[in-house]
Image 1 (cartoon, one colour):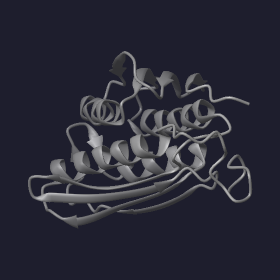
Image 2 (cartoon, rainbow, N blue to C red):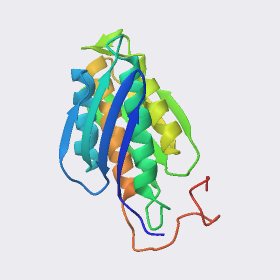
Image 3 (cartoon, rainbow, N blue to C red):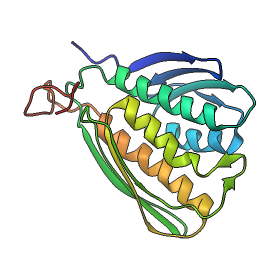
Length: 198
């Protein structure tokens, strides 16, 4: 099986409709979720991850929880689908990203096993229209449906905007390292598979 490197995923429920075209090796970027600060964070993710990222999301208008959760679910599924059998990928990524006072580290493993360690505390209830309690929830949704291991850790900083943006950029840059194709044509696992954990 070869790597597809792209995916088109649609998620439609009574609460939301989310459509995402994800291309691991770059492409058009357009984002419209109705939550401006969230769009800004996803734009940073796409730019610094080197991704093609065409996203539209519409919610039920009750609050932003359903949209942000379902975008995370859809992105996770698109990541999993676009990586295929993960043959030849680097698999691991790790970076620390500064943004003025903020310093956030991300380490991830495209292991096939979902796990999130999130420790980037935000001290305000919202950034624009984005409730800050939904930031870790977004990453949890991505990880659970993308089936990978993610650690996001704050090392310095108090400005909430900077911390949140550094977290998204750190995730993007670490993912960019992990998704890259190496000279190997093998699955980077002693088990020979990363589809169910390796």
